[in-house]
Image 1 (spheres, rainbow, N blue to C red):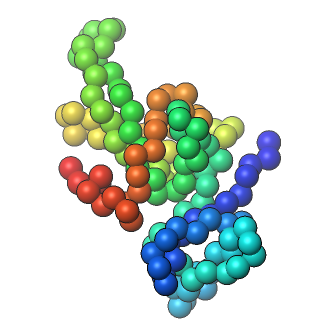
Image 2 (image 1 turned 90 degrees about the vertical axis):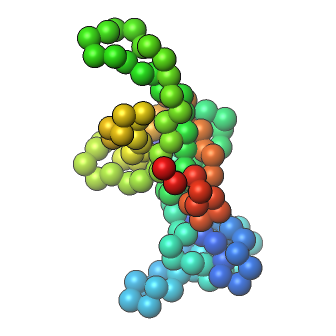
Amino acid sequence: MNREIEFRGKRIDNGEWVYGLGILAYQRSGWVQIQDEGADWHDVDPATVGQYTGLKDKNGVKIFEGDIVQRRAPIYKLGERAPSGEYLATGKVVWDESSFTEVGNYTVSTYDHLGNTAKNILFNGINGWHVIGNPHDNPELLEV
């Protein structure tokens, strides 16, 4: 299976997002550049760099590392098979080396209404995840 390779990062000079295939990174200096589709190189904030997961959300939006995603999830009471309600699960997309799927190792760590954590493998939006933002443009989305 071929996966589309793409990176994104926020430009240092104007704060706009740049998307491209090429990336240069020097870890010791924290210097990162991304080459856009026009073959121009742009200095980007290393903290904002994320790779395209190869997955799209339920609305067809590309999901990148670091994106904040949300879905409606069922609430089950102990011993009951049918859900008693639902809640909005919100999480951040991260690379997880401990999991494996045929589409990728990207997981979302979420907290349910009781504060329990859960990890959900992303499968092209089948489970209802949709991108609602990212922590660089929308830091309030990560606030509990």
